[in-house]
Length: 354
Image (cartoon, rainbow, N blue to C red):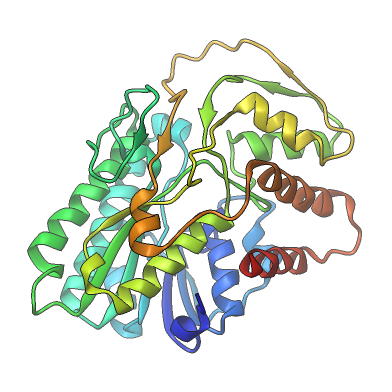
């Protein structure tokens, strides 16, 4: 798909642009010639992929997504052609530490975007990014499809499930009416890895930071199984969805899973073993660590709907996903040329050619 046809010179509003996925999305959109307007509450990590990229934003401000008035005023003044809503508290373990802020950001923040869109009613296509963890996960060998029950055990998962329910209520009540100029869908993806992620309590950043300092990585949950995917996979899905919303009214109000087509799932141990092949000096071990906080051991998605309605399919297999991820970090930690933005850009170009 020729994305420049849809996004070049268009006003695009991105929330959560300073985060891992948000920074990759913003970089890709900037390469397509989009006019970028972006808000985040802060820069969540140090180092920061967002800061490395030096993207040219038309607007780049710090706002709390849970504050309706500031978000509404911004969106009213911008009147964007496209909206990508990624701003969120993205960590399961942190949601146990601060459930209130998690719900305010993930649930109420989404509500504020939807209410702003309803009030402004400007013609635009909108992608609300939630999570694969929005499903009521029974941890059996089931690939969850978009019509499966929403739910969750931890505050993070339930905050994303509630965001999906709020979205459904607004769609059925407002965005599917003849009076609405808004076309909108949600995107569900997870287990995303790639260069530039330095978030706490994530296996890839933990490995890369340790290996860069010649330290051993201890795996706390080696048998947890996930359909790992490179960050460019779901972002490609978000762009495809936004573009097709512009052309296809039939997908307005729908939700879509984005993940490996064949649901290739691998354990944490598999992932670390594969990553270590492409990062010199890496070392790791398995150690049983008692943790009373619940984290899912098994979760995978059925992406047939995205394939059928959007013609979306993943491009990188598990080996390439691991290789691209490790090589990005090895370049960052071991290269002296300080051209990290160029490395990100090269991976986007290579991915686009596939």
